[in-house]
Each structure stands twice: as structure tokens, then as C-alpha cells.
Image (spheres, rainbow, N blue to C red):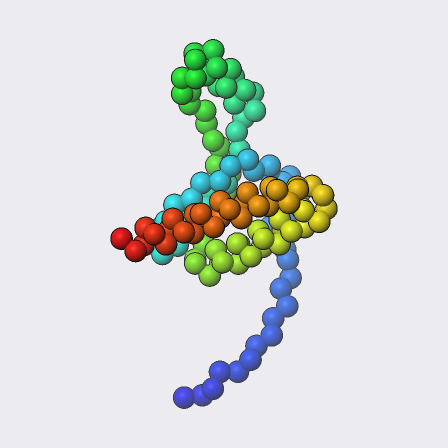
Length: 126
């Protein structure tokens, strides 16, 4: 069996639709598809969201439906999810260093992340 040889790649970033405007994403949903994760990213119509909130308040907190418009559906394998988590950590550090978010926010994020991991670990031990 031949030993594997090293390879070196340079990634060239190419935007498929460079003239398309960036879409603001306001919410994420995910689900398992086999061993992969389907991540959906979307946004709310702000006028309809405000109307739904007002209707809910006026009805004493009754649940009101509002549409989440899914703009992107991305399928990730577990290795890419790890890369995404690492990139998210780097983004958070950049936001803290820029003063856009404060360390307290990061502590909350880390606490939620740690609690979620512990919960997942507990679930897998059942």
C-alpha cells in the first residue's frame, strides 16, 4: 500500500451571485438528517412580526403565528459543524475585541453552549 502524500491547496473565494444583495438573517433552525445537520436560515417580515407581537399583547399573551421566511438551507456533515463552531468562536472574539458585544454576553453564550453540551451528553447516556 502506498503511503499517502501531502497536498497543499489555496482556496479562492468566489461568490456565485456577486451582484445579489446580502440577506439579513434573523433566525436559525436545524434538524438531523441521518448523521448530518440541515441548517435553515431565515428572516421575518418586520411589519408582520410587529403586528403579530401587538396582536399577542392585546390578547393577553395569546400565541400568534408569524412566518419565518427560509432563505437558505444548508446541509453539514459533523466535521463541517465543528468548523462552523470554531468560526463562530472566532467571530464572537472579534465582536468582543471590537466592543460590539461585552464579555458578559460571551459568558452567557458560553454558559448556554456548555449547558447544551452537558444536556446532549446526558441524553446520549440514557
